[in-house]
Image 1 (tube, rainbow, N blue to C red):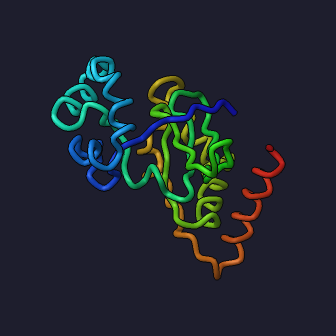
Image 2 (cartoon, rainbow, N blue to C red):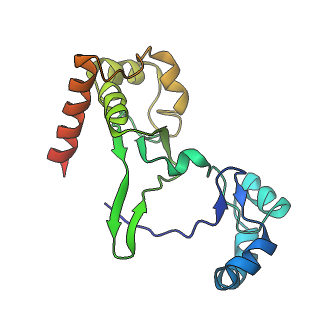
Image 3 (cartoon, rainbow, N blue to C red):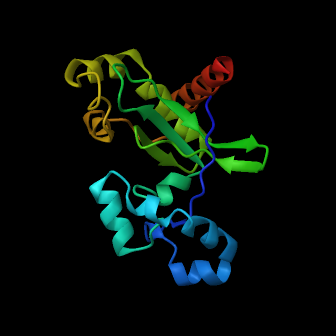
Length: 179
């Protein structure tokens, strides 16, 4: 799996970069480092990102919120021709355990529990769901938008229901085998 380490100085609740004054006081070296790239960051190609950065902090990132840092995330590619979901959580890195942050070309559903995430992942990876998505979502840029989830009546995970935890366990096993 390719690894890119990202410096994220975003307030996930407010969904904008931490205030510049706060950064200068609390993280002065981080602010100084980012300030070296101010012009580059303010010239980002996306109008939406550039305008947000101009209104808030120049290092603000788009589409970073509390969901980004959920303990478990079900993620799939949006620019594909088939739905292949995976559960992401923290990983060990040379600089400690870190959150896996999916790129902006993926869709994600945040979860608090591994069991529920694996349950939903298994359902999304099922042949009927994948076939259904392929039948109405053309491959490429628009494939697998987050809105696809509305088309499926996925029952809420219930750990008391044997079929739910069995499906979850099968997804965990598939993830282990895929490694």
